[in-house]
Length: 116
Ligand code: FES
Image 1 (tube, rainbow, N blue to C red):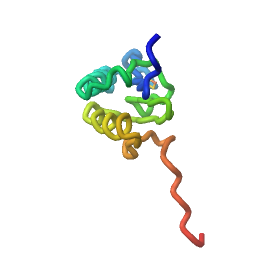
Image 2 (cartoon, helix red, strand yellow):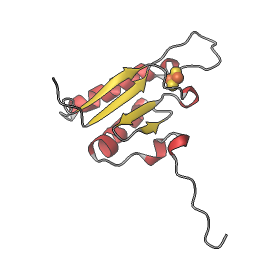
Image 3 (cartoon, rainbow, N blue to C red):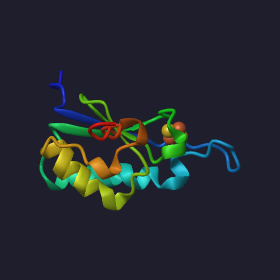
Image 4 (cartoon, rainbow, N blue to C red):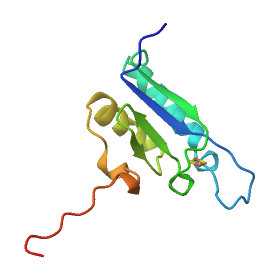
């Protein structure tokens, strides 16, 4: 049995029929995003330690392309192929989620101003 991956990336590649009110990640470039993850992991020689898999609908369709990284459970939204190197370098390798790409549900609430 293979050892557990240090980090595991799931990319929603769900496809719905044209005109579906929820839309889908497939029409927003999900397959290309998944391929970019696989390619970037291979380039860095870490594909045995980390893995990128296709996933079905992650129920965050409005924010697609939806990506979630475990074990942290960090969610990224609107991911494009050009965002993938930053996620790989900063999060998968560096351990720091890429704040600018986080899904709204992951963003920290602004701190209240002092005295208010
Ligand atoms: S279709 Fe991708 S999250 Fe639902």
